[in-house]
Image (cartoon, rainbow, N blue to C red):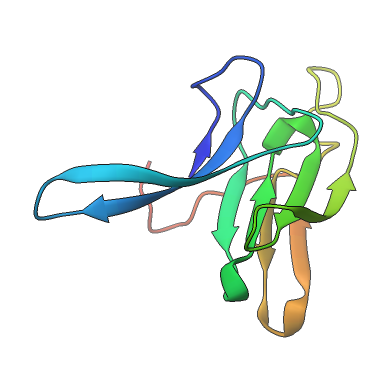
Length: 115
């Protein structure tokens, strides 16, 4: 999940281990952008094969992929979104089969998600 409310200066991708029987969750990995990036809304996290993680830092205009050890292996930077240019950054990403990356500047609601 993307934690964009825990620290007002830095958003972080976090992976939790959930124990449904005990109704608990334990933080097992945290990925922070380098240099730090903050997005008040938007962003996404995707677990990839081999323990890699793809993170979009939403309106901060940055996408990073981390290896299994938490090191950044590549990054895309766009212009950070502002009130005058709200759609200039890659805000959601998804890696599709064969390694292609889809990045979008607008997030659409799934039609079955409701209002």
